Amino acid sequence: MKVLVTGGAGYIGSHTVLCLLEAGHEVIVLDNLANSSAESLRRVHELTGKKAQFVELDLLDAPSVDELFASSEFDSVIHFAGLKAVGESVVEPLRYYQNNVVGTLNLLASMNNHGVRTLVFSSSATVYGATEEVPMVEKMPLDATNPYGRTKEQIEDILSDLGAADPSWRIALLRYFNPVGAHESGRIGEDPTGVPNNLLPFVAQVAVGRREKVMVFGNDYPTHDGTGIRDYIHVMDLAAGHLAALDYLPSHQGVYRWNLGSGKGSSVLEVIQAFGEAAGKPVPFEFAPRRPGDTAVSYADPSAALADLGWSVHRSLSQMCEDHWRWQVNNPSGYGS
Image (cartoon, rainbow, N blue to C red; front, side):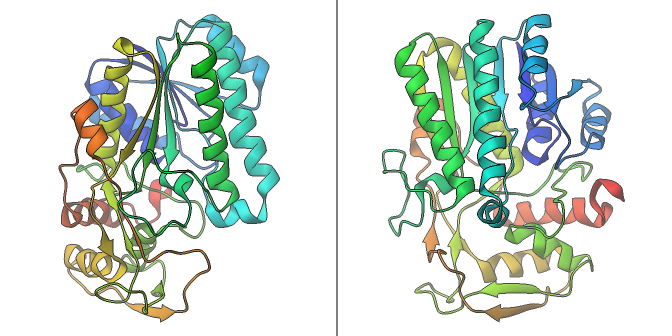
């Protein structure tokens, strides 16, 4: 299959590109490198012995996107490209709506113009909002609480309307929880720009000496140790979920929604302890007040993905931390090391 991967030089994208190449697919990566690195694709080539074609392009450049589709014969698209920092989205909402929603509309227009009707979309558990109901199931109402999450929710609405209007479309909406870890080689991994927005890359940067300590927001939640509980998923398990969805769609028309998560949660303190064990040293932390909007517990019900796709996670929290530490210690400054 000839697959266009938007945002394929990013964290989840590069691991998925690696899996696609290993599975024998022909891969073209579209990425503007705004929050990613072309070095990731060079290392994917090194690891697989296979090369993805790279096109440096922004989805906001609609004419160039359409030219790419006109000059290629894609069978399907996996769409990762987008801005993804929750806090930044609150400060710059217009930038997020422009980049994520308008960019996706440009992509869909080109797909529609050139008869490409198979799409796997990188959504997020943020579409569920600050619900206290767990586990989260796909039929729950969506209520994103920040501009980033609302861009994902709006794109899901657009894709649902598209699928309803034209049943020839085959669309997977993958709502994933907290991707962590790295390829077991330690050659590709997460390289956040600036201060990490998520827990585990921040913990990793503290462990490697780039930052002083982890701030733990809230130690008075109604959980076993007082800290928030979240569902963490190894990035390689997540990549496998994209391939499973891609394999499913050719024989299934319509729009499908799947949670990709482990189905269980780990607390902030459990993550810090597990990472300290992987690194062979304690990770310093300090408690701070709760952040507005954070919930006590959040984890997925991934049973639909198991039933429909035969997909489930295979890697534990300790393996996530071990692989993430191997990446971080070998690349202390990310791809710029």
